Image 1 (cartoon, rainbow, N blue to C red):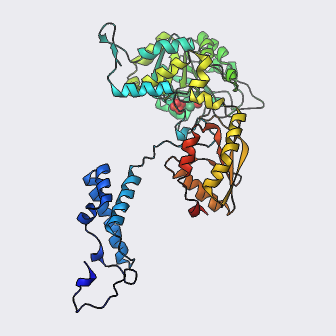
Image 2 (image 1 turned 90 degrees about the horizontal axis):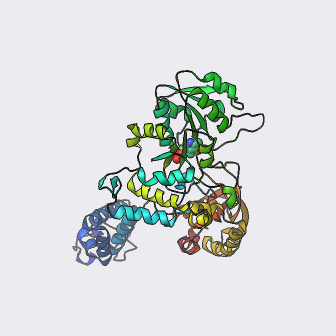
Length: 484
Ligand SMILES: *Cc1c(COP(=O)(O)O)cnc(C)c1O
């Protein structure tokens, strides 16, 4: 390996590392690298096999570099450090927690609602030990998975019976298949929604085996349109909450109460897909009013469906509440088994619903509601406090200022109702490329920071920033020189 032992006949090469190109035989062997202190850490953290594979991969790259004339050859320590970085990058999950500073509180792409502590504890407990999931502790006989939620859901919604499935898309699919499989489902042309992620009402209907019967027009649908469409083939009349859009101007729609009357006189059930659905009057927390599930039940819908992780603030789930006979039919559908919820989520759902029994303390216990109801003055004070600290972290190439902005609720809930908020606006002294580089560097942090680029600036809406200390220590991972 060493130049001192080169044979006298070999071409003369100066002994300084920088002056001559590296040769393949200058590279350490795998066993040499494994003998370094860094490799000991590597083996301890990732195991001998993964460590050896990573070292081989790093050595391969080094060989390529040497062939291309790069010099000098890396030392065994450098190669071991390279292998460590490689395994650490691989071990870093893309599902790690991040800061949602997009201004959209219930951001579907960022996992919607964050859960209440009580729900987190219940989920962890359900993971750790066996539980009476389908076992009746009183009788010692087989029990029902739905029993854990039935009474709570009925209490909170006023419905006779209830069940829960994977998500609201599943709830709609299952309910439609049960009520209108092989038959007709009547729905207004103004309510044939697409809500993103490939959920389009006509497609769901087709997959549910129901024949779509559209009535009315995009902007106006009347009671007589529904009445005229009912035939002996009708399985259900469907009302859909137009979650992510509003039809305004010259419009007419038939209220759920009026539709319930039409459904009753026609002897078909009314199904009401509320989308987000809420269990409390949001006006009480300073938010725009949204029809509650209890109201939809009281208006006479036979079946009401709604999501668990939108305004309700729980884990992903789809709730189906309604009359006993209809829920029993839904539970008999074999599709129910394919859409059921696991014990971990069931525990988290039950704990979330429990919080609704005490509406006075709901806003402090349920993060989704707490964030939505957060006063702008509090967020603005946080923005003023953080602006100079963030300015220091991003470096000279950018300016950082507190600003007013508007948050969205997200997940299609109350689409036109934005919330007054505050945040930081970061402007680049070096144009949009530098700003995009900064946004990318923020996304690449151990705790990624996700903002939004708007009108030439990077806006960080601080409504959803709870842990300032973690945020600031995460920002200290930015290399401001590389960003300049
Ligand atoms: C969001 C939504 C759904 C789908 O709910 P997921 O819980 O996302 O599956 C269905 N219908 C309406 C009206 C919605 O807004």
